[in-house]
Image 1: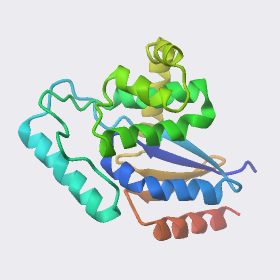
Image 2: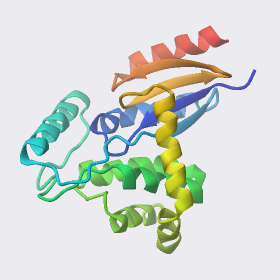
Image 3: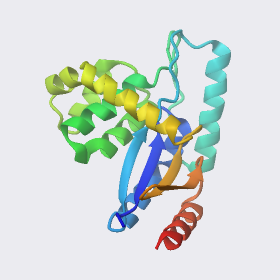
Length: 208
């Protein structure tokens, strides 16, 4: 029997995934010796036109709910400015890019983009901003941009999106344990650490 895999389906521009960030970090530290923990980028939104004022207010309402429910920091001043196009593909592709350059940095890049977007107010739909985030992790800018713009990285990003759809994931964050061919959902949506750990322990015990 192969060691179990904990698949974390998420998107760096999903506010509830930002709220879930402390939980997944604790899980990665607590369970790293018992299972592989892997990130799958979800592709939350792929808008082509700037958001409306009503759409902006709706999203900021969600942000406020996440802040209230999780304590995660948000910068609301000048958030989602006029003309902002809410396309999460570039941010997801940036995570895939860094994962291809240095697999050990994939979770770090995911969190760094979340921090840049939610806590610092940067527009992480822009390649230059994403290159800056990667550089903060020690990734050389030219290498990042070359890989980010490649057909290979675009295809790998789309493969992440397909994996999420094929797993039946309809919202983020989602945790699924894979034991050989068996898939067991641990949680859908942002849940407290204790609840997630209890569900994960039950799942691992059942597979033992």
